[in-house]
Image 1 (cartoon, rainbow, N blue to C red):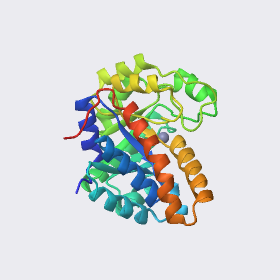
Image 2 (image 1 turned 45 degrees about the horizontal axis):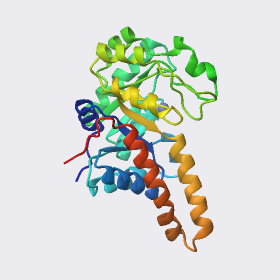
Image 3 (image 1 turned 60 degrees about the vertical axis):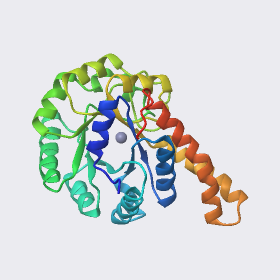
Length: 282
Ligand SMILES: [Zn+2]
């Protein structure tokens, strides 16, 4: 029953001053571990997929598994397609069964990003699908300049213009965050985040949530972040736990059950970081 629109989860997060965690899941086990952890913590959660995963598993198969697990969960669960970089990618994701998608035009000039995002939003909303977009460039943690150069960060005035022109449901911002492993410790620009949050009422998203010191993540939640994407750390944790369990157990099923015992506490720890007000569902 609780497969819910991501925008409803973000509204709940905004009203209760926490951030929903969105984990980059990739198979049944990773989906079920994330949902189990959210059920224990009594918070909503978001299951998120990369479009490129279609190379390995059809997007419709992934969406069907995630949607089914969500419908049977004890907490609200959103299912989201991350980083679709073209209108074409979005149009593949929606009929595959995703009720929430990200269109990422952040590498394009402002006007082009806004124009395509507006087209995506208009089409997606007709089908009841909500849309996250990105403004400012969230690059790679492997390049220091991607997260240190503040000319790449989201400008509050442009953020206002962007959400007015596009009617997007949530906005990913660049405030000193990057994807993947950070080559050195990032320092989030909380002052800029606060200004963006005061300028627009659209829920804000932080990509590159792996490797940012926990106190900075918690601070960003206090100043307006309502969704945090966690990919790199989740991949590393599931790989390590899976490898260890496979070495110790005689069967795949037994090993996956054992790996879950390692991964679920990790997911719970991230849910706690993002929940400074200790919000709990009834
Ligand atoms: Zn991202």
